Amino acid sequence: MTATPTPRVTIKDVAARAGVSKGAVSLAFNHKPGLSEATRDRIFLAARELGWSPSLTARTLAGSRVDVVGLAVCRPARVLGLEPWYMEFVSGVEGVLAEHSSSLLLRLVRNMDEEVGVQETWWRGRQIGGSILVDFRADDPRAAMTERLGMPVVAVGHPSLTGGLTSVWTDDATAVTEAVRYLAALGHRRIARVGGAADLGHTAIRTAAFDEAAGALAGAWQVATDFSGDAGARATRSLLTAAPADRPTAIVYDNDIMAVAGLSVAAEMGLRVPEDVSLLAWDDSQLCRLTHPTLSAMSHDVHGFGAEVARTLFSVITGGEGGSHPVPTPVLTPRGSTAPPKS
Image 1: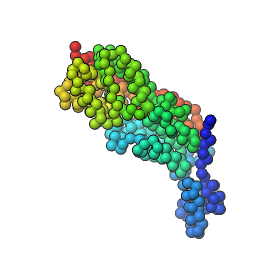
Image 2: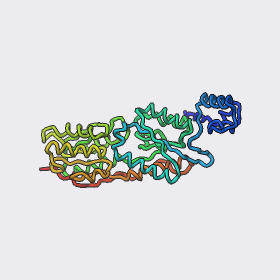
Image 3: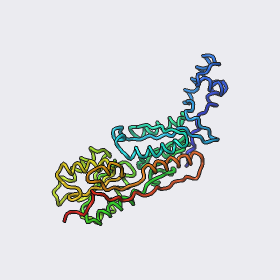
Image 4: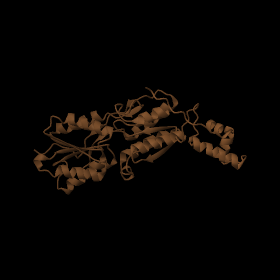
């Protein structure tokens, strides 16, 4: 059964409740003269009771103008600030917003319940014209929320996770399979993956693809982390402390920060890269080209990804033709950190 979107409270509703004209409501909220204090107080009370605040976006439905786009991210600030992927993604979004004279409203949240509350507050308060939703999980509540509110959004995630929302995504399963096959073609038979947070949908997709691609290998390991360098280092250390015959000869990381940390751990343990262990990063960035040796990576245009997401959101808001679609799949970029294992 399809939920009926909850009607948005408008300035007309506030005016009717306060017994004044829409112009009087505008005067009150713009702090203009011409109203008695009693009338002004009555208008503010009506707005509070209805949960209405004046539009910060100045958006009109007829023109589908959007001055502010929302993005809530459920990551610790210390991790987000260090992760090149998000910086590149936001840069791509901002580039398109600038073309539309629009701005990004970014908020860090602690959990999914908080994000649902934030998104609903933004939309009901007319602070945004639409939102970008990231980091989908199984049974994600945001699909139902946006349907209930009638809120225009674009989901960054595979359609299997996003509940029918307009989605833009990368084919992570194909990319993981390519990474494992490349390392196997070099001769590696014991391959590990240091993955991201286990509850994230794209982590689950990568995990399943790795299991399938590595099924015929002599040994395969997967370790879940929080994407941070510290977690990547700990995972690498745990993998490489086993006896030489029982440890991986190649490790794939779910982001570049963890791969750089893994390179440092290998050096700390007296292991040579790639002679003793090959390392392969996801989300190629400048970091991967500054290390010694340079890091092989699964490369994709993250800036372009962000730009495409923003363009798709504007299409959703204006009733255009931008439906769900993938962006180009990450491709392997071999560098100095991968080679055949020692015989």
